[in-house]
Length: 595
Ligand code: GTP
Ligand code: SPV
Ligand code: MN
View 1: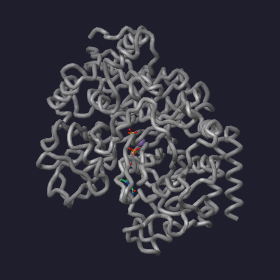
View 2 (view 1 turned 60 degrees about the vertical axis):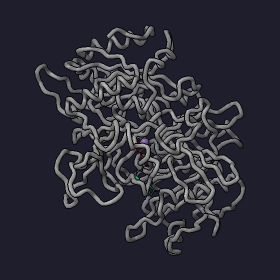
View 3 (view 1 turned 30 degrees about the horizontal axis):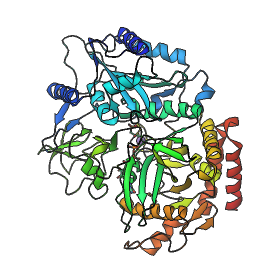
View 4 (view 1 turned 180 degrees about the vertical axis):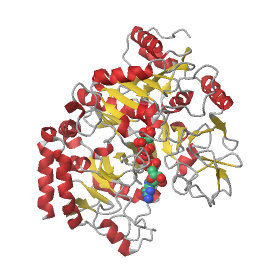
């Protein structure tokens, strides 16, 4: 296909990539509904996609059992020196990594079509938006990109003849020999997978996986890893944060951005259905926030995405009504179970489990089966505009002004339901020492406690020590207009292993307390770890939590925090002289307060 673009650099890059990957043909994507339908129809015909009778224009995909999540072990930040990538990233010298990957890319698209996807992260025309071009050999990726980003000809128009774009090269790494029948989910073995970033060149090379953040390169690769590096250079922020608007009964609006690690509750909080009378919530984004200081000196956030790539298991009308309403139609499901009447199902779905289903591996499943019907990292891809609580301002070009930052994670013990930072530096300290139990969103062990600063461990495109410093620099610029910082833990458990907090919609009570703090309506008590709600000021009206459970939920476990100090020191020591002195100072203060 002839290039529809007049951009010389783009055309040259596409030609070079085609010469290396050797596809049978090249298809420039226009982003149209017709194009989406055509690719879906092709995938249905080839057996890769299963149309769902119960959900209009919706399809189920089953991945290869080895290709079910991000692969942090195979993800690289390839800066000229290892020090620039820092201690939290995998690093290979750019020359060496490119040589290795060129070896894999050579001829990798034989027997396949090369799709060129022009996409915008952020609404086209927003001062915060960035253009990317993804080259891929996966039609599944093209359809997902249609939902997750703004794709098509209007992006090429915005790019013009000499506009800047971020090149994102992707291959599933499975050339199709002539006469061979394709598998339902072609991909390369784990040791050939590479998710590589070259931040100095704003370049992404991904090989071998067709799943989620490994393959939809606008998301974690561009909007977080590359964007975080660009943001530091240009003085803005790219964060793993949901964005929501809360309006109190008097009509005052608060905008909240919250960073939790993968599969730790962002989508759920982003679409919260408040249980407190008179408060209204609207969703702006569920995974990524790009933020820049506006003309009034406040921090403005946009959601660079246009869809939700959400965790399916656990999603129900009971836990997240708005997500369920968002996925009624026009949705891609990956690694969910298929019911006999042509619907999807997963663990935690409303109602009784089906008597029979086909599990995510394509095998018969019944409630008596030993394994899960859906993979724990099964996902839905749904357009954001289908969310019943999407904010009318979710695509506002200048974004929304952030009042509150929240950090958090999954901690079965130690960390109370909510605490507030004493000041910006203390808030940055809380973010930098955040810890959480690992989840199925990455290939690897689940349930291991790890430090995950700012929920950015897998997503920071440069030395995390410099990233900490960038947070201080932003705080200094924002001064009194900086958002207030809080830390939450929805996941504390009783010794018997029961959740102490009902979570989900009830988290609105905690958000209300935060807004009331900002509004000066409630006080707080000083504790060694930060400011906690005063007795009776966290609204529990209508909630029946045993007093003993609530006390445990709010308990500041001083000995347990003291016991964590050595691990915090070890964590900080990894950054050597890149660790801002202001963080060491905060750790000292914490130690003093813990006594
Ligand atoms: P990524 O898309 O991987 O970035 O995940 P996420 O942070 O958006 O997490 P998500 O909201 O999809 O939630 C992940 C899992 O945590 C789901 O199984 C939810 O049901 C569960 N979860 C979310 N919020 C709560 C909560 O308040 N309490 C409890 N107990 N579980 C929750
Ligand atoms: C995450 O893991 O944080 C996700 C899913 O949001 S993925 O797009 O696969 O990264
Ligand atoms: Mn995420």
